[in-house]
Length: 137
Image (tube, rainbow, N blue to C red; front, side, top):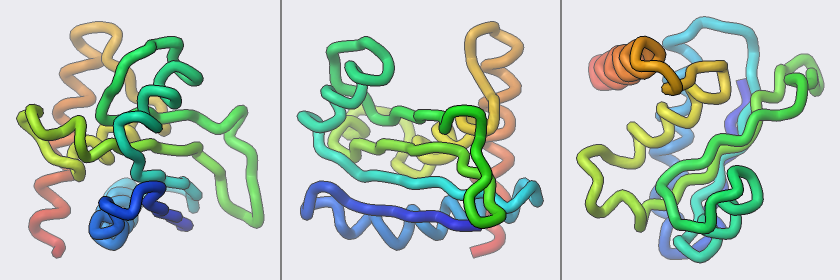
């Protein structure tokens, strides 16, 4: 697995290592194919532009997951896509940045929350991953 985490705002550099560990734990939990994902930690201004570019929504948010087109294989790894996280948007949320990351990673592997049953399955998996990570760290 290959997890790249970059902070595009120096205020959020402290999140790089813990997020890398969370993402690596996520892939260990799945025991799936070797995957590559790029994670960017951004500020609110950057996130608003990203959210508009990829989702057509001109507002700030906490996480945006962007799937790679057709999951190309690069150097023997499946490129899942990119995740953008905005720690500042999490202040008033009932969850933390690790939850937002897991949520984004699940989107990259095909989870959605369009229907109630999909949302319930996604939330169940998020909790399973977070619980597993808690006991393995």
